[in-house]
Length: 118
Image (cartoon, rainbow, N blue to C red):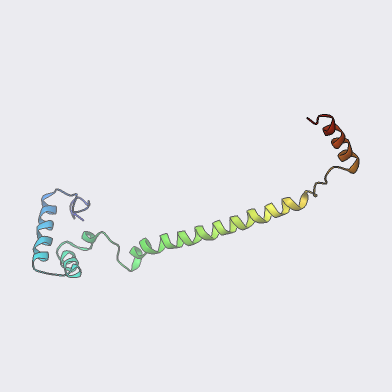
């Protein structure tokens, strides 16, 4: 991150961002690893330059809160589905089975259909 404007370094165009890009390029040419470059950037510009929260304290909530929110959402969704299925089962119990036509109605239907036989 650009420490001056707070935007991504590759998008920033401030003089400070240009100096930071040159500093990173110099470290890469020296053959330093990614972790070594990150340490050098933090030493030079501070923690905000990495744009990632620390793994402790209040910053840890950036990692923990989304995970907890996801777990709670899954639990609530599972509970809602369970209640909907339970309610649907109760609705089916309230309605008695529908009986078919009686023998008299069947005979009358057969007679009516026989008159229209083509």
